[in-house]
Image 1 (spheres, one colour):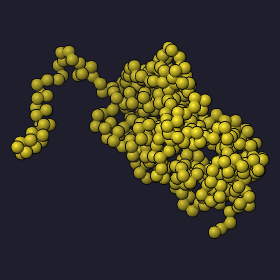
Image 2: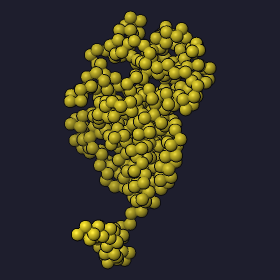
Image 3: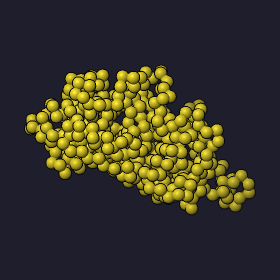
Length: 399
């Protein structure tokens, strides 16, 4: 196997990647370039740069990808109403292909012969990173330390960090991991591994408890253009700023908490606790907007594909031919999903109060229970008899 001279590491400054940076240098005697993506994790990026250099990085990239993340990953998934196993809004799943894509671009710029990540051999992220790597460069060398080294727990990593003078945020008193971006924050591992145990209130970052949320509801309006949210309460905002504002609004009212046991791609079940306040509001509003602007059969066809879409995202196939085809179909359904939705935020809930659109297919004069001139109720008799024909025949021959 050829010698590794230069590696681009997806680096967060947390326990795993801090240890990995030093381990790569010691194990492969190579140059390590640290890359951190700013996708709204609200961390001090300057401290990440300082820590990376102090740990041995030869170069540090810190790229602001917030607008690209929301525009090219979050919004496309929300146009599809994507949700994995009926609960998970795919916050981490959507971020990984963007990070890996930029990592491969840096590898090409720097002439690196390998890339590395901090995902474990048990999780989904290793698949998401590496499928993306291979989709951009089939010959790239991938170093996945969790599949190579002898350390097999985060306790081992903390001991390694201590012996090498690496400052890391994870401590034995808080032995769970978290991942944050503009769409969500997730918590898993450690004290959360028992699915019977309630998550402690002090882990939550983006949302207040519904019990402590304001006693007065808040009404907001979200405007959509072709399936994408563009304004809140009449104020136009960029995609990243709009999602950030929805996070603040939802978090204040305790919206968007989820405690999920999900099926990982590698075959095991895993318990995760999530906060997705803005995404929860956005999905509710988008579904309401579609309800008056999408044709029934188009909607039902698209809805039948939501599990497949979400599965592709969750499994890491963002840059696959089937995902490309599916996204084009989804976007075709969104051409008239334009208008305004009014919502109420209250004690952890999002309630639709109204929706309107210039492309609305809802006709009050068709749906009314009062006198109308467009619908002959007598016609329903033939409609029902034709739809009942196969049921009647089956019953007749079974006598």
